Image 1 (cartoon, helix red, strand yellow):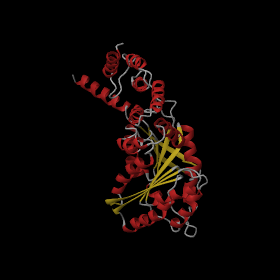
Image 2: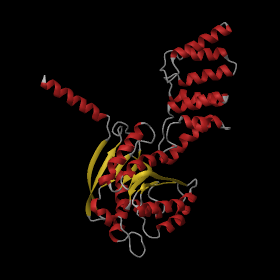
Image 3: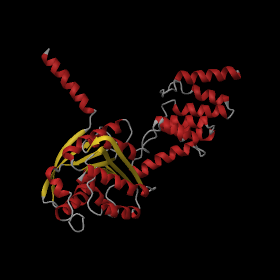
Image 4: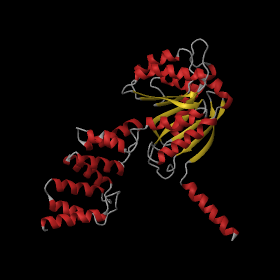
Length: 384
């Protein structure tokens, strides 16, 4: 009995492990730093199964305490498809953070050890990650106070090393507030920049963030997506727990499934073809994040329903054709195609399309019974 119980526990533990993200600990021999650096790496849940899939990178400085909140949120958001599954790379710094993220007293740019750390990230670590893991060409970096300021230096690299910057309560170097508004308009690539503080943050740092927000807000443009939060009651450390999910939600908003709000406030107000909105959404995802995703069933249903409400029948047919191609074993595309035939005055074709889906997989509200009921109603109405 005891052995049977142990076996059951082992099997349960193993099965749970299959569905969890994988954590890897590595020691990286850095030539630039002339020392070994410890890395903590979280791989996505399906990394070993989906061998053709590439993943964005989330690089975490101060990983001694930032890795877990970042990795946990990345895993949670990606599980619900609010962001792409991503590889999280954490650099363990500890007390080295002050040397790693320091700057020259005259130029206020990295010097000596901090310049070496800059090259370690750009010339050693990131190439190593790209060579040893399946990466998409989209990288977000996360930092807090000293390391948040340090992230800004990568904006002065041409092109910038990172696509996204999550700066939590940055302890800015002198002149950084003057240099950023000069540099940012010169950057030609798409940049996502998140700045977070709290009302109970260290007073000087909260003031720095508030003043920086006033400087960066006017710079928001098609190339510079800027976001800011000042969390009520958040301290210097508790703001991390609120800033990370807020930043990920904002940066990846275009990636998320179409929400009810997007349906009501965007789709139903379109004066352009609804199917083009769907095509553009996934083209943008591919362009920004380097990910060639299939269209979600949720997004087919949302755009198909919107096309019906707006009476965009040709757009509905285009959505039906895409859905039939992508999900041929489901009723999804057949339903919208049949609705198109109904509105085009082709009841017999609509009836046959509804009937043809009797042995296919149901999707959301589109059940086999619904399809057959619609076919039967057409049959009764037209005497077929």
